[in-house]
Image 1 (cartoon, rainbow, N blue to C red):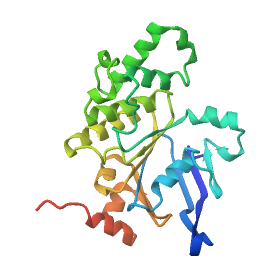
Image 2 (cartoon, helix red, strand yellow; image 1 turned 120 degrees about the horizontal axis):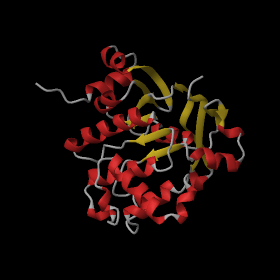
Image 3 (tube, rainbow, N blue to C red; image 1 turned 120 degrees about the vertical axis):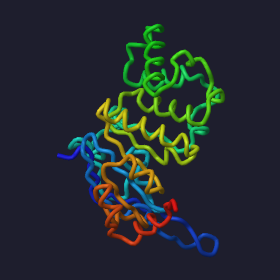
Length: 264
């Protein structure tokens, strides 16, 4: 049994158009997507902007409900669970967003941000201030930051440091699945490899399963075990990372490969 399975997952949006909005158009953001992701695997999900990658990730996170199809996590169809069970299961899958400047609340200290994440699962720490501070400091150190800086605010950190804090926040509820939506695209190239190495390290240490979303095939090849290529809401190719690079099976993959800068 796969850890995560997407079964014919579909999401359509309807928008009004025509004279005074009298007509409607259906946009197939995700169109009959089926994928299996194994426990401990990093799946790279790639495609051009607007292909449906982020919509697919929000369907997995249960932030959007599908038009049809199912998300099956550890053998359970999430759509069949009552709302209170969905809330419990949501702690098992967390998201890392693209922009480290927008994803952290500027009015909250790092301690407050990470403590809030930790307390979604470890409620006994609410009455143990020292224990909570220690847990937050340990979380900072796990992502390579000094645990003494938990009283600072996001604006006091660089972009790369903020993304590490965002990763720490995602780890707070002790998830099993991480969805990373373009987590390095807003960072300098010199910092990108550090974040990618951190994510791989965390996958190995914590036995995480990860979906890594990007438009950049070179970044995905560095981190992913397998790659799924998406175009116009559909999965057009899935394979081992090296195989996708060495023998692309779709035109979209070839286009993405041609966009990778070549050293001459």
